[in-house]
Image (cartoon, rainbow, N blue to C red; front, side, top):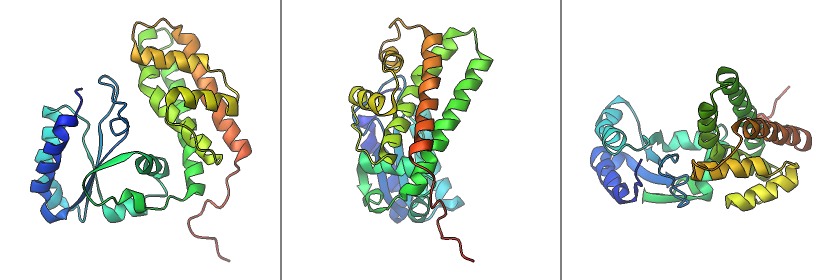
Length: 249
């Protein structure tokens, strides 16, 4: 995957031509917006907001998506209506908070910054994602116990997502964690009480495939860390007021 900076304006131009007045906003978010793009592992996250998205609108924009995905070999953009984005702040709380924190509006209105995220539901999503990640890691280990290279790939592909979840677990505690990964790990290790070595080794492995690491030990420590953060969150931030609308008699 190549760095997309030179092609983002071309994407916007094609979207404007395909969507016309239906196009409201084009937003770049994620590692590229944070200038942390990694050619091998990073996705290029683009959100396209429209007024409507019926089959006709989707047919009009489909050639642009195919060009971006197949010819440019970049991550397909997400398409949503403005109403859908506002209504989904409860179920996409992590994603929306991340977009609000670091994004670049490539075209149109900065809709993301105007949406209020329900933090009680954010707390539920954070624990859900932590526990779901732990289940997936266990499944990978069960299916590939002796395939070190498979486990290595799982580690390096998942580490940034796991660090995002750890950062959001800190946010749930009322913290304002740093975005820098080294500082984030140091801070989270103190708060949640886990050792830094395994996760630091996985980050080094992500940046340098030749970095020496005991994959099985790192993998097991990785799972323990995620379980520890989920457990801490469950104990220290009990689930409260999870309904969008208060229950009535």
